[in-house]
Every structure is written in structure tokens, then in C-alpha cells.
Amino acid sequence: MIAFRGVPKGLGAIQPSLAIGGFNHNVLRCSRSIPSGLLGQQANAKQPNNSQRRTFVAKATEYLPAYPDLTDSQSTVREAIAKICSNYPDDYWLKCDNEARWPSEFQQAIAKDGWLGIMMPSEYGGSELGLAEATVMMQTISESGGGMAAASSVHMNIFGLAPVVKYGNEEQKKRFLVPMIEGREKSCFGVTEPNTGLDTLKLQSLATRQGEEYVLKGSKIWTSTAQVAEKALMLVRTTPLEAVKKASEGLTLFYTDIDREVVSVQEIKKMGRAAIDTNQLYFDGWRVPVADRIGEEGQGFKMIMHGMNAERILVAAEGLGLGYAALRHASRYAKERVVFGRPIGQNQGIAHPLAKAWIGLEQARLMTMQAAKMWDEDFATGEYANACKYAAAESAFTACETAVCSMGGMGYAKEYHVERYLREVMIPRLAPVSREMILNYVAEKVLDLPRSY
Image (cartoon, rainbow, N blue to C red; front, side):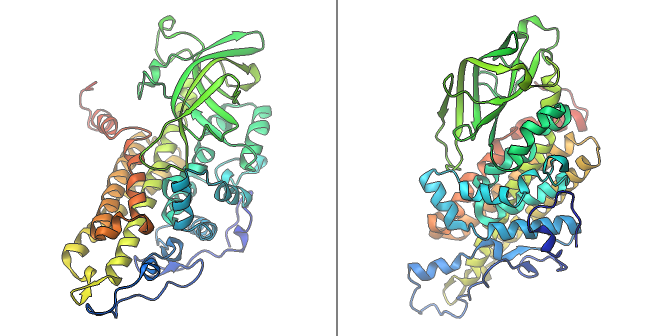
């Protein structure tokens, strides 16, 4: 058994998997058995009706591989999360996507069993596990079929309040961490602004101190979950950009209630992940108590950077989960779909692209786990955090695209789910940092090439 600090509910009853991982065997069986295949069908057999076609798609949690390289604690996390996710199959996420509905049942189930505090200190109700365990958790959530919608419903809880843990005072930790871990409060992240994009040091939103309050004025963009969140982690200027010697100075971090009387939250319609809202915020006269300021005034940039590498590693894991989910759907379909008297997976034109996609995913997964391990051990992780995010996003996109193409028309059908994965996998390619900026970083920091921008 694995001994955890602040053990999430039910975790102590789960034994670590002893299986040796494989793609189509040694799996975490979390619910009913996999439906029987259609390999015995002949080309002239009666084609399956719509109901039978849906048997091509089993719950992803029924066949998640038990990776041999995971530690006992990581394997136990994977099993426990898979059991929760087995109650929220692909059809649940398809419904949330079609209805653009926040997945409150799933988010509360994760909170109920104590997983929202996986990396948080035990004295506030957290489990005090490492980023490596959180990485396994987020990959498993995405891989279960929930994709970026499922991952994004809990993503902010996993990394977002790292600045509060590191720089907040004791009163703030008790006030902010406990309700978030218990699932009583949701939060959002306000950094990017419409006119700055990735150039974070050029932020313009301003907080002016008036007695025991700050008054915030400005705007933010790409702020996910702001429609449902009670609180926001906001990075704004307390000293105007033109008044500082270095652009990194004068930025201050706040974690505060969203005052919807003065904060306008306008949703941005997107290509995918419709279940999770993404927004532009406008605010003028937003009064924030000094008690909600995290750390010292003007030191917000270094605080916000504390969680950036961790977020990139987690986003890598979330993208990988999508890739693996798509690949498993496609592989199952390729074994069971019979055309011209044999399963289509017997054709190298189908089999080889799927095999190459798996190789790419495994390469990226191993790099992602290495980056998480380095972060947990306090190594500098900038190059690995960026590189694993790049590798994971690219390999996941390839896997999702390959899945859609290998399944033909059914890959384009919503009921087979891989088209949803393909739409959502664009997110880790674009955010939280672009592919091009990652390549710039690696070229400059690793290869010692001249800065290009």
C-alpha cells in the first residue's frame, strides 16, 4: 500500500498495479469488460446498425495501459483517477461539448475524493504529492475521454495557486487554499492582455492603491472558467510601465473575489472545448483589499513565473492524454472494422501511421515525466518544460489526425469522438506558449544561438 500525506478519499484501498504495461494488454480495468469485437464478420455480412457501431467505442478507462516506468505512488494515482473517470465516459463529454455545459458533476467528483489538492500542503487539506503524480493525474483525466474539457475543469487547481503556497502568508493560505481544495471555490487566471499576447512584461492593466484597497482598471483575455469562477488570480501593474527601469518591475499579484458588478466577462466562442468557457475581461473600479495581495507590491512577475514551468508540463500531459485516447479508439476500430474480408488494421496503410503515432506519444511522455521529476527535485526545468510541451502537443496532434483519417467517415462523426479530440488538441499546440516561442527559447538557452526577437 502507498502511504500518502493527506490521502485522497478511497486511495488507501487501492493496490498499486503490478502489471507490465503494454498497448493492448495489462490494462487498468475499471468497469465492465471490453465488448467483444467484430473480427469474425465477413465482407458480405450484414453491416452493423447504429447501435452496434457504437460498440466500436469502449470507455477509454477500460483499457488504460499500466506503464512500467511509473513509481508505485504514480501508478496508484493513475488507478484511482481512472476509477473516477470511468463514471464519465465519452458520451458524457460529448453532451457537455454539444451543450457548452460546465462539467460540474465531474469537477465535484474529483473534489470529493480530495484530488484538487494533489500538490497542496497537507495542513490545508492537500495530498502534498509531486508534480510527477499530478502529471499522471492530468494525463489520465484527458486520456479517459474527457480530453481538454475534463482537464481544464481542474487545471487551475493543480498549478494555479502555486504562488499563494510559496509567497502567501499563513492567513491567505488558510483562506484561499482550503475552499479551493474542497471544491467550494473555483478560480481563473488573468495574465494575458489583448494588446500584449505573449509579451507579458508589457502588461498595461493598472491597480491604484487607495487606503486599504487597490482599484483595478484594464482588461484580460483568454481567461478560462471566468463564467463559473468565484475568484481570480490577477497580474496587474501597480507602477505604470513607463515609470519603471525594468519591465519586470512594478507588476503585482492578487488573488481576489470577482466583483461581477464591475467586471464584465465576455465569452469567446471557440473551435473546441465548448464545455469550458474562455473569456475576455473588462474592469474599471474593481476594488481589491490589500489583504488579497500576494507577497510584496511590485514582485508579481517572479511569483507568476514560479508556476509557469509546472503548467507547461501539465499541459503536455493533458495533450498526451488526448493523443492516447484517439489512438486507442482508432486501433480498436481498425481491429473490428472489416472491409474486403479482413480488418482494416491488417493493412499497413492503416497500421503503420498508428504505430508511428504511438512511438511519438511514448517519446513525448517519457520526456514529460522526466521534466516533472526534475521539477520535483528542484532542478532548473525551463528547457525540458518547454520541450516536453512542444513534443507532446505535436505528437498528440499527429495521433488525433491519424485517428480521424484512419477511421474514414466515422472519424468525422461525433459519435466516435475522435473529431472532438482533434478539435481540442489544438489547445496544447497554441497555449500556454506558442510552438515558435518554444523553439526560440531552446535555440537561445540550449544551443546558445543569438536571440531572434
